[in-house]
Image (tube, rainbow, N blue to C red; front, side, top):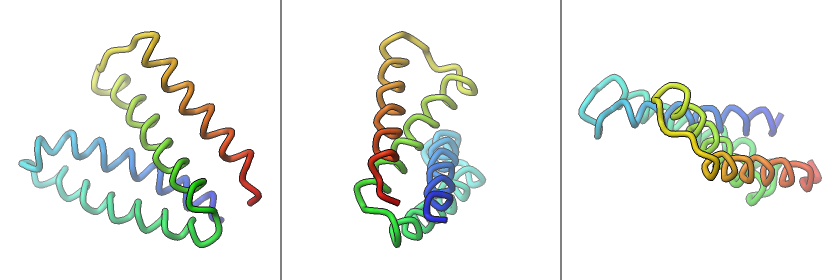
Length: 106
């Protein structure tokens, strides 16, 4: 169940990062509320996963899901640039996440 909690925490990190972008510096109330609620919920699910998973594993995977998810969302929804160096960087993050998962005893 810890891995499910960690996945939910990572998805919520993507949600709050995207809504923060939409909040335009916290000047739009709707996206600002989503950012705040999403942040708290993301941390809560992360804390649940850390009851079982090692700190380093949980934190690295949580931030990695958020980073790669925000990267993909930025490209697909916000029209951010795609170039080979950014794609390689994202692929390296995903590779690191997979290795961290494989190295985890849980």
